[in-house]
Image (tube, rainbow over all chains, first blue to last red; front, side, top):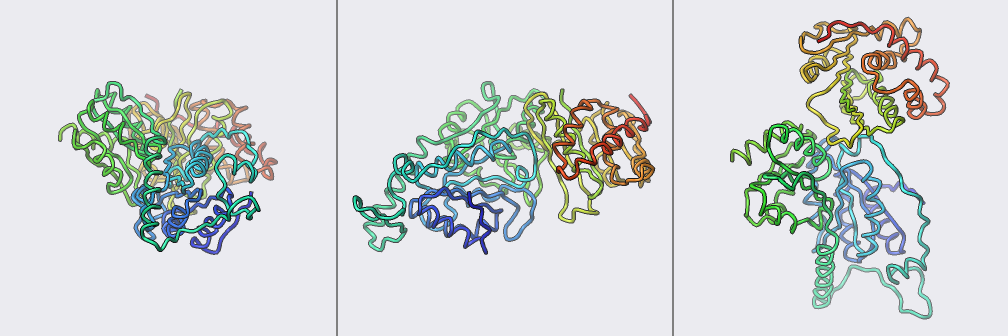
Length: 311
Length: 183
């Protein structure tokens, strides 16, 4: 393993592009403003169809904002973030254990789909400590193994028996660029069909639903405990992949529950995806604290009562 | 078993490391633990607090509204957290620098002269271990042998020679903690 401190975020992200083009497992990490700087290269990596992993430990914004926890980079992470029609695969850990586990998962998905993956964490999980069990060490794949498993696309040196591999995201002929965009969209439909991950708790008899990811889902779990003690039948759906988003599952739950509350440490970003998934079958509201403030479980229960149950 | 604890004081008092040792001690007896710090960018001199949870089951939120125990080391923290102790819960405080002592009638209150005892021991840095000892006397949720293992795990090897002094401070805290009110 090589760990390199780059001179800037732009340099780090372009090193990622170069390393990925050579077929190496490459990752970079930063907190919100740094990830904004990396977005240009991430778009190039998506355009060149290369595997790479980006970790964003989100802080409050916009601008330099605050160093305290937030989830206000959801739009940037899930809707592309850089320029052009692309998506990163976005994983949202809600524990230190998953922070560790999702590095492997993120790389696996990135290589499988030749697409950037992102771990979207936040300052709460970034700062807390808890128990972690590390998996057994796995040896690095050789170039030959990568070719066998993921295909022969990396610029590892042209051999006599194949055409040269070219890494580029440039296509000046619009007809060809459109064909490439269609190919990318096909890949995203495949992701949506095969790679949605989520977790539910207390949904079997739920009349209401919290939708929350990352740190917020942990706080919502406590809010579920508090609400159920009060006799409110509420469950939780936690998207683990934010892109692809668990649209189908939310749509099905909308046939069962009376309303959903999207709880985020943002002014309301994921709530838009929840609304699109639910297709107006039931009311969907947002509750959030932002600017580095972490909502308390009690506040969340109160918001459910006021915005959904009474509403 | 589930114990939800807030430890709050000034940065530099050893608040976060006390929580860390407690969390590692829980790991040593196979419990689930979480350690969630909260401090301003100023760190030393500013307020610092940490939420520590030890539980036999999976921990939901590492952030809480109310606590089984509050360990309070300055007036600002007392003002902020006295009301968050669950009825019947424990408030443990060091009176050094406290101008308005706790006044609730529905919680158990204990006092520990941590700063004074640490000065008597000749090492002000043992302060936080004296406080930890006092807490473990009131709530023996982790065994002494696991605290020792927790210390080994959370202290860098170059500080392992200080473990006996830390254990002595924990013992001291267990001896000198005073009961103010029980309910």
